[in-house]
Length: 134
Picture: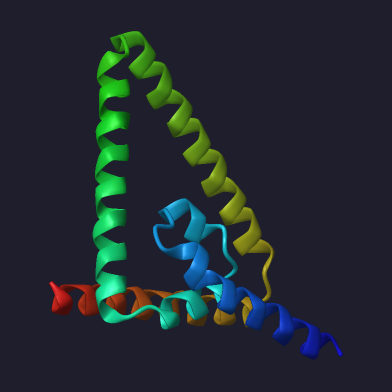
């Protein structure tokens, strides 16, 4: 029954996506579940996918320019405070990951390594695909 409910929900989402998505921003797409995103992208034509990529590139560029302007407006003391806060957050994340890793069994570590390898290969393949389209 759960499978049927999930399939119905996914089908409804897929049917609604083309109507809602013409002009969705990157944040709208990120809000979807992975299944909804996959279904949405599969429903797009090649031209629509390319237009979406170009739109997202423009959004990212505008966001980077805004962040750069905000950074340049900061005083040197404010910049150094932000740098220090970032270093602290990074050190805390590293410590959390290290603690988690050290608490894992050998089997869990092997599975995690395999997962990381697969992610790395997927990203490499994705980058290659994007380069081929350019």
